[in-house]
Image (cartoon, rainbow over all chains, first blue to last red; front, side, top):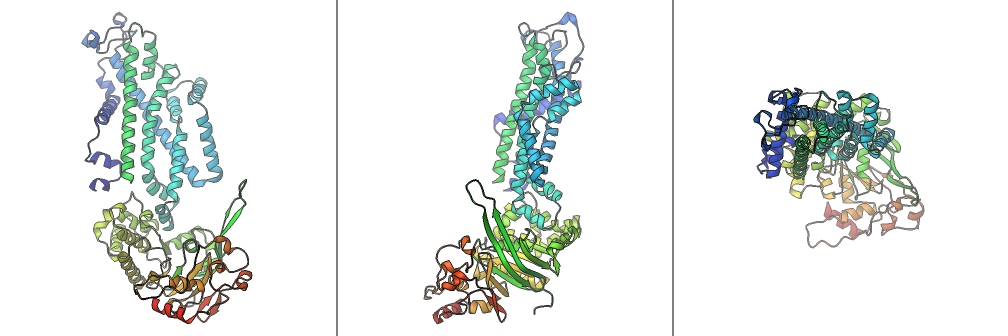
Length: 289
Length: 336
């Protein structure tokens, strides 16, 4: 029972049970991506913006190219590896900030709806229903077309992408937890609602919220990629995974790796987060009862 | 023994739950609690008994201000609940406590025992940090738990230990009024005895006034001086516990007492039995709510609701109060 004595998140790492290989590989990949996100400028062998027109479409090393450009070069002779590292960094920042905004906004609104009930509840939930009924990409296109694509606006935009799911989830969990004996027991001691929510209910519902986060995170990466692919997301000279796919698309017949390499990074990262999230949920479930 | 001003007083207390009528369902009204008058003197120990659904838990919640009454008034130390400002409420919360039915549900699964017992102290600004922890530890020792419990989580404790923790948390602020809502019902008999002993010891130590809500008549006599028997939201009989156990006058009380299991195998079967279930609809209309299950019911019981009539220091709401056959009385004595 020792492992159940630690609060939720900590327990994951102290579990005596070994995780399956797929989960360990996923974790390894996520750590690598995170490291790339932090150290990309140091890791990049070249300046990703440096163009050399004489070295366009060099083959990657594994296809018979030179070790100078491990992943070859693109249509302007820029180093693909350096570009990929920097693009991963951008996409990661957008996805992390976006998911955090999403989670905080949605959770706060969910708590608000559950606490006040009545009109406030109806208003927030009605709004979230409205959000869910419009494909977000259409909404995003409208906003970006209107305001232009500033990185901050872009992050804010992906940040509101799926707040309604957090709001709905949080509201349900809070309403459920509030009728639980422990919440009432604390209320009877005279504690203020904020204390009950933050110190008691939040730690009890954090599990499903973390899982929601791991579902949400890959979606935001895909949203960022999608919008950048359409030319409405990250704008050059900044680079992102979606933008790389978009730029590589024109040359897919002669240099398929320009599309494929960032695509593989997107695929592996979203897959890894989803796997890790799935695993996390199983762990939370096992812990709860 | 009764001091001048009761610590807790209720007058004409009622709580109605209405269900909004739907397209096909008519609007329905449930009278969970109706016309309750009660007085708890300082240091008083009042038991509220009745079968499940009789409104005893609702009554406890009303008295603690956790639900708003539909009718009547509640006074704690002469101050009406309805007239309390937020600051007055906070003071009332500091001076009152509830011990809930299910100790596992009443404890936050993600928080250590120590932090939970110390919490009321922090909430009311009496102590914080190390001082609060020390007081919590002392509180745990008072209820017979070691200091090693401080760092544990609720699921690591046994049922009896959890109930002790809940009691320790309720008592850590030295409240004046405690409502024990089925506080021992979830525990097995040997642990019940320990917790009852604990409640008595703490009552002596702190001079508590409390309400002990239970359906278990065997437990109640060990923890209370007075008893109030509820049936479908109303008090049908009340008085000093020994007198009521010796000679119950309401047929419902008689049936409850007769149904208490006892160890004597030669004991005859209960002379008074009741059949069926308490149906809320019986409480509507003019008559006595118990008449549908009462062996002694007469025509008058269907037309006129018996008032709770005082007789000395006890009171009964029955048209045929006191009409108990002699063998029946003997049975009651066996119980006491």
